[in-house]
Image (cartoon, rainbow, N blue to C red; front, side):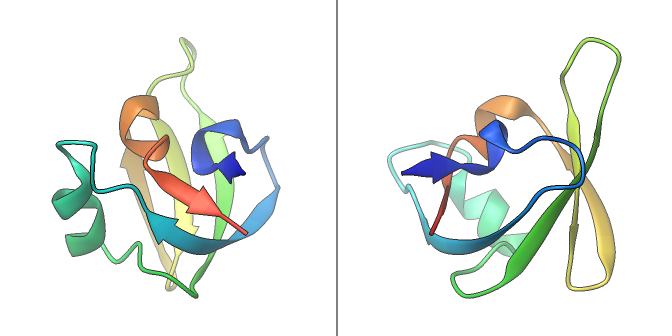
Length: 73
């Protein structure tokens, strides 16, 4: 399975599930990263952390560690 952290700039994916073993997973869901929603990786910072995603018409920057808890289909 691919995670959101593995997306390249401009790539899209559909969220299959959130890995709740990650301590930040509740925060990710509160941001709107929920199963069935499409996300697009917009860009990475200079040091590749954080990364910016487009979801539900909003840009949200999260750390790569947090993006690893977003499992894509």
